[in-house]
Image (cartoon, rainbow, N blue to C red; front, side, top):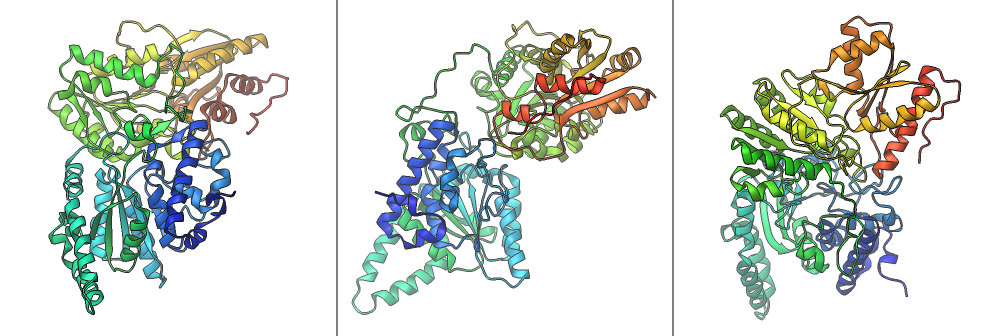
Length: 635
């Protein structure tokens, strides 16, 4: 017997289902998400919480004519399933498969690309004004989580939307969480609203009574609903949203699909900016995710019965883990050290720090700009702040890094996890640009470790450095497996020569040092003797080493897991030009000028020529080895 989901090939098919069938469909969608995530991994808890909301939205609105704009995207798996991608859902986050986020190229129903948070209201306002200016007539809906609403951009957009008084709907999906537990005044405010279910219950009881008054009940109810639209906010504490120019509706149970359909239909018929407050549960319908939505926010393959993933038998720690433990250790002896995260204490490895030094741990919510300037204020008053923010999210605080940190030369440490290829999360999450967007800034030191032991030394060096800001870039994933030594400082700007050779110099940065060493071993079998240098610092660069290999060898290959344009290799070329070393042959290995697709890091490194074999082939071709060079084969 065919399931209901098998008959849903697009949003129009939802409109033929009755209320009971909508409930059944929600369960089938939830089962598909759980079953798929159990096999391949992905964002689980957040997507289980939005199933009914996605079904109701596509039942009420006519996507893609009506514009439904999801924030972030890791809450939009049900949306993908309902918009013609059910048969490909098994491929989500795999190379050449469906993206785990929203992509305009993937479907006309993905109205606006999303990977970072807090963009949906701004984008929706743009769509709404474009509609008005072009004389069109359709609905625009933004779906944003309560965690994403902690970002300043969301408030900027709401303030502007209220001023413009444009027809649009914002659905606030309130599950009391972003990835970790929400923090801040907004979270407290929303909690107050959630604690008033008595208003919703009283309203429903009054409606029942009025409806049954003989003769005039329906007319009275109609008038009462009109009055409620204008006066209900006097009884419900949605004043903050009303002050921004939005009509506040809610809170409503986001898992009651029939109620959600009715509420959305009502909101659809109103005018101006409307905010619909929907309360959901992260992980809804799957007990392990309901019990631990933080741990099961993003998952690898797991056992459905228990929610547990296979135990990691590898003793090698993750870079994130080493960073967190190292900072906690440093802070024990240095009371000026503080740690800052932007709503990602687990992702950045700072849970132990928070437990050990709670008075010096600050989770500021999804507010990277504030995090960096907050750190600058702490540094200006003598503290040693470490702002732990993923490379891709640090982009959001660029002006604050320039204006508040670098120009004032304040000793802020920017700890940038996920530098380089991230993997299945795709282009919006790759740390491909941090070297380029930071190295032009005055006063900043930029460094990257070759392994987890060097990460410890660099953390200690960054804290001890008194000269100004430091950016420390390290990759996602497991370390190399080297022993962890007692921490020591590394001389700022000093490279490390790991291997001497006469034919070519491999200047490697960060995560690409060990692949370059392996490539050097392979090159030796072909009679090519390579020098390998762990450059460690892109700024200040060890110009003495660059000049020596330029003069003594004359053939240089730079290797980095970063965009080639503006990256480490570009810095080496600038060094050579500055020192008028014009006769050196240089080849830069890095990532082409393109958006990286999603896929496993191993696949992406192979596709982009960043494996030891690919480096070997590229060097052989460059130095003139007669054996034909084979480019990496795309998967």
